[in-house]
Length: 209
Picture: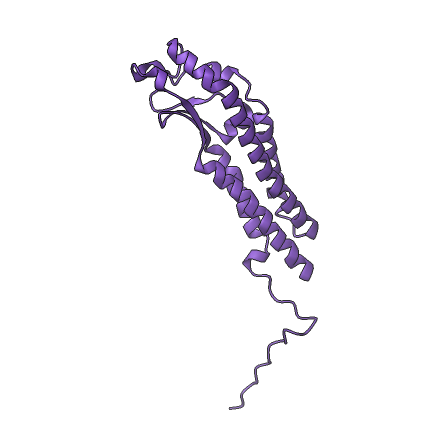
């Protein structure tokens, strides 16, 4: 029986030969990274604690739409969590949150494009989304340090805190509210940076094709 010879593979040093970009050279990783960063806005981004006990939190979407902090762990009336914490404007926090989410959505839309310009736009939107989250963190910490800590302590001492801090006992003077950011916040930031990196890889792969 006559055998049919197998043609040799194309030489890698041939200028006309373009290797396959691989998974990380496609638009799929950047699309997934942008989607993950956006979905994480549904989870708590920041928490207010007293003696390491969380009594209020707020999601990324909550910062975007300017909703109230949500009482947790049975502190106070969960159906009426409007306190001075919610009445005070949180500086420019909402604007940074809106920018981060809007840029993430734009990056997600652009990640579906196979054009090289779409890859560059993905890099820019990914980096700017992460930068907006950093700006949000700085602004929220500044607001908290300037007003919330002092106001929360005064409210608990006057037994007017709707979150129920007056129920913690007779050690109110020792309560020092703290502001922390959840792991979801940092994962969202990393996801946007990863999306920027994958967009760059995709753009580089498009340039070689």
